[in-house]
Length: 117
Image (cartoon, rainbow, N blue to C red; front, side, top):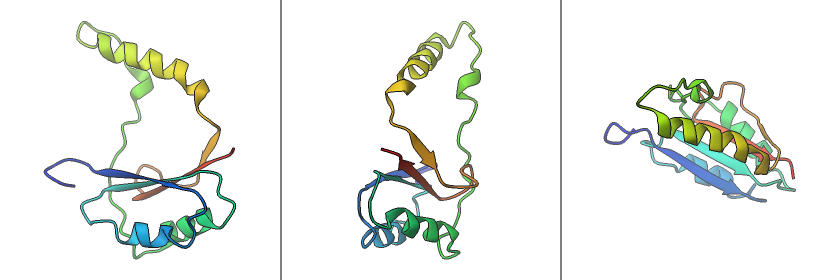
């Protein structure tokens, strides 16, 4: 956390098994969440990240992700939220299939998302 703000870093990765560990391990302490997006790597990138997730040297923060984005009920103050919610619902079909590997995505500091194609 920096200046009372939650900090997340997105790390795109394609065939980075030799470098991804160093990238994650040298991330500054104020970073609350590290999101690794594995772009269908053909090497062991995902396995290296999974090992780091299990490794107790990487501290896990207790950051909560907003999970009620689909349950917004319209009122006189949130018309923009409703428009964004509908836009997101329609846009999801353009995203490639992917898999989140973590067991506890609400509390893990490192999140691994692997694109399937």
